[in-house]
Length: 270
Image (cartoon, one colour):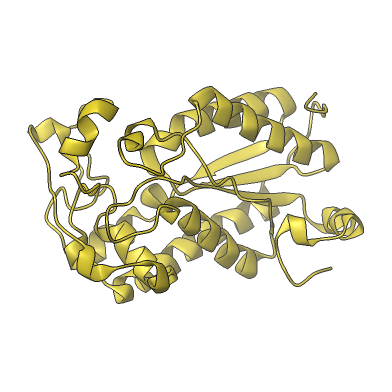
């Protein structure tokens, strides 16, 4: 078997042998969208891929090919962004999962690098596949499985964690410094009402209002940032990544050892 943990790097016989020992696989999902002047457009995908690779190294779990694009309609306000319709992302993940289940995978862990926007279509796919097949499907989002460490190390004020902001920027400074431009980072904490604070690490009452492509560019200060990346550091990015990987690895190891799965249906996605 290849030393790589990527499914696409294996021979089919390697996968067959792997399935005799483990029926677990990771699917990284991200987005290609604007991330202001200081981060690359592939940030969300780079994050999900890096987390998947680190977790695979710790747990021995295979990784399916990454889904590079997601649901990002509001970021279409900036050039270069690619968005799928939510039903397209749901259908894509459903077909990928059903293909894997057909071959014998039973536990599928989706790592989402594009926080709030991707979650509804991903959760829809996970719910449909689980109820139809009986497979165990988890949706793992860095912003929600690494809240404790983020709150512990954050340097920004409330509202400082949003888009292309403190935690995401620190993480990318650690993972891919060659793609980042710290000198171009700028602060934009935009909060018109106390219920509209969408900082995931601030525990307060919140109201959800969808972003509008026609006003998002103005909201994002014409740059694309919502939050404060000016306080981000590579050192905090490493701390965040290491804790995140430890938490995800712990959960996947638990599922592998403790979660028994009986598959009810295996169908070709035709």
